[in-house]
Amino acid sequence: MRPRIVCLCGSTRFGEAFAEANLTETLAGRIVLSIGCNMKSDHELFDGMPQAQLDGIKATLDELHLRKIDLADEILVLNVGGYIGDSTKREIAYAQSLGKPIRWLEGKK
Image (cartoon, rainbow, N blue to C red):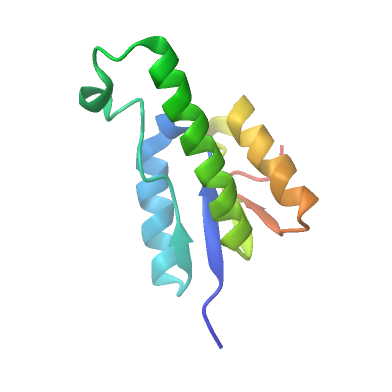
């Protein structure tokens, strides 16, 4: 039997929460799918790019995260301080449409 796969969802502004959840979930024996690129903290990669190019990269990363949800058995929403942004709302709705179980870092909001 393979371990459960969990996809972390939440605002990339909460990088520390992503790292902590990744560690906690991994130590609990789960396979963790998370963000691979943070356009907020990886700014040195994106400095000087035209906005249209940045928008394209963001759209590609958002689509990639939906594919991670496809692979996951469940999602864990990192709703730090109860915050859920538009991208995370879209990911939650997508997971719900697939019937994926949803866990919440700070309880369902």
